[in-house]
Image (cartoon, rainbow, N blue to C red):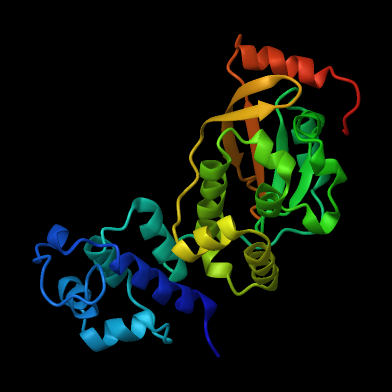
Length: 279
């Protein structure tokens, strides 16, 4: 039976190998190279493993590289920190992937979201199902309350809801960022039925997702300022934060905050005072 994590590991290593310029590892760029990047035997030699063993690794066979070998491969393939972390997780050397959370959001976490006042905030599970939000987020993105429960998934909404597309400041770049972060988090769980079903639906629904998913690019989350274009209050510059409660590791809280005294803070105040919304 195929191990989804090892299958993903092999395909990921192959995709990164094909992106390495031979000159960066001291090899000549010319020769009879039928495909771009490094050859398998070159990766094996530079990483201190046998050609046959590395070939098996790319084939997704049931072999388990040591941490030392993973680190050597990361150096040879010039992996970024996020890519290195991804490979460590796929091989069982990194932090374990978060497990699925119970249905719904624990009451104390909903109270925490509500206490954030005008700062839009929501909660997602390991497969990015949205399980809770506060009044500010419902007014920031009303579609969260009206979406069918089976479609209330952050990644699904980013790629299929026109309202989210209009809300994101640069949809092409922002949606790709969401995709790469989701893959980094879900890589070791790609065989889970919920993840398999979500990816299959998205590949059918969105060419942009299909192309991005095939690239196997990954990235880690970082708090940063994001731009949104809200239909009622205009441009919003919000700092994006992501938190994992110690007593609910299968849940992530996503919070957007405005700089004190900024136009965005004033706009959020107007938005939170608007009529309607869902608490």
